[in-house]
Image 1: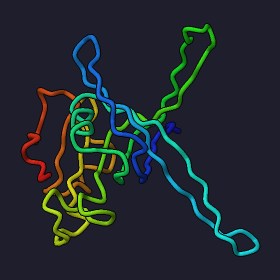
Image 2: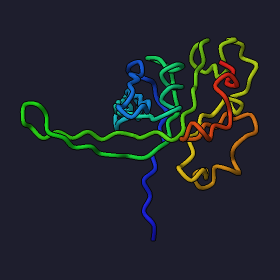
Image 3: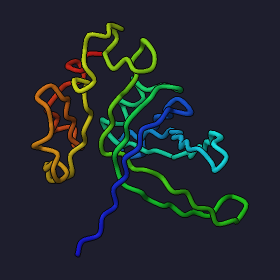
Image 4: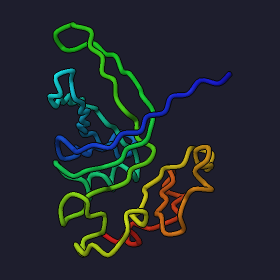
Length: 173
């Protein structure tokens, strides 16, 4: 049986994306996303727990995140978990678990929560027409089950800049 490392979250950015460039010229963006869990306890009181997630995006997806995402905006992130370990300057071993994003959907457009349109701010566009930013794997194939579910109006960005299917100007916001 195959193993599976797949993460899907919907939450709000806790900070603006920080975009950097690696020594070999690849863009990388990192930011935080908060997700909430609410429930009622035995006394019927509403309880809430917040989880904070570290997200990392690479290449074209990193550039798009840096350009369009900002603190407080709602976003759907799909990717895989990865734990990094290093030794800090103080000699203490540290680790960090991150979501390495493959797909990102911007939710709650400029008009506020629930508005999934682009920069126009009109509420006429249904949520299912929100552009999807999807990064395909190195061999150019979409993740399992994605190709059939992908809408014609969804923007697809491949990992290699030389394999770009949709230009950034085609994204309507």
